[in-house]
Amino acid sequence: MNTLKIERFRFDELKNAEFTLVVPHIVNIVEKYPIALQQLPKRIAALKAFLPELDKIEAQERKWRDAQQLDEYERLRDAYVNTLIRTERTYARVAIPGYEEASKKLTALFDKHGRDIADDRNTAETQRLYNLVEDIERTDGMLNILNVFALTPVYTAMKDANIYFDKLWQLRNTELSEVEHIDTKAIRAACVKAINALYEGIEYWAAESENAEWKPLIDEISKLSAYYKQQIKARITRRKNKENTDSEPTIKPNAD
Image: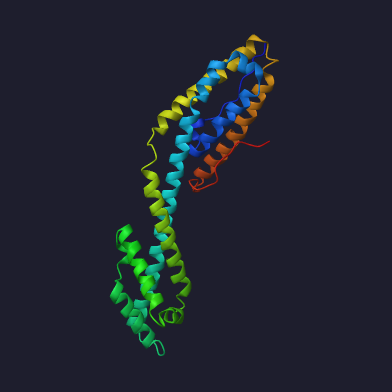
């Protein structure tokens, strides 16, 4: 008697965001088949019991992604304000005809606000940049001076990055206090055990019933596994080729 087997793939190669997508998909597949609901209700229920925990993992992942975005806007605003400061220093050191007066006013601006803004603590830097922007926009002619040095796009980008950083910072501080810290590794390990137990149950009943009734279910799960196996293999190859796979798109269950 030929025994049908479910194709497997390595769940440990999935990112957390991917794991939280594929497990509910597996549950949805299995629950489409009445024979599985009839013969394996406890094993299906055991896997479904992890779904609320996966929601917590997804929420925690979202906060970490917000933190990464926060770091990116911190880096951007630092780069922009330092560009303004480098330009000011360059023109202050080298007298270029036609730029002297504008250079003096730009130097006076950073004499007032300091040239170590990007080195300050997050909240302090945010306020110092707000103060710098307010001074620039309230001082007659200062925006025109920035334009003289072709700094208007840099200034606008710095202003926008600081505003967005501040919004993310406030949102993150509020949400972090509300997010429950969970042991993602332990939850995933236990969940994979429940998946394997379900798969073994399906394979057992497929063997007991001489395969036919269970074949469509096994084929559908195996198709999902083959898709993930292919995507994971491609990712491992990219990683071996020194490509950065950290920020690549999330692998999602194939819609086909």
